[in-house]
Length: 139
Picture 1 (tube, one colour):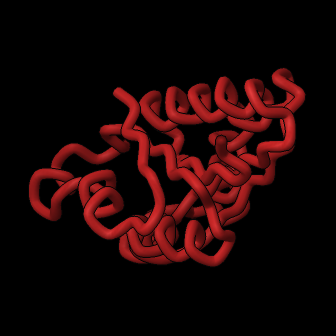
Picture 2 (tube, rainbow, N blue to C red):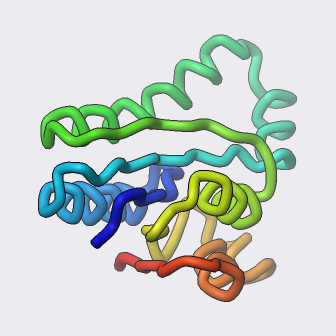
C-alpha cells in the first residue's frame, strides 16, 4: 500500500486530524514510515521574530506545537520523523514528498490562517494540483 507518507503539520486541529489518518494507515502496514513536515512561512516567521521579545520563547512555542504530534506518533508505536523547514508551505511539502519518494501526502483541509487562504488559495489545493503522488485531504 503506502511505504512513505508525508503529513503536513501546522499545529491546527485539521493537521492533527491529518496526522491521525497517517497513523491509522501506518498501523495497517507496519513497514510504513511517516514523516511530519512543519513549514514555517518566511513572511510569518519574519513577523513573529520582529514582534517577539524573546526568540527562545518563540522557538519553544513551535516545539510545543510539535509535541502533540510526537505524542500521538509515539503512542501508536509507528516509525516517524518530524521535520521543520522554512519557505512557502505548498512548495516545501511538495519538494519534501518528491525528495523522499513519498507514496502519499496527507494534509488538513484548512490551516491556521483563513484570511491568507482566501487571498492566496489554500495550501491543500495547491498541493493537490501539483503533487506527483496521491494526496488525501482531511476535514
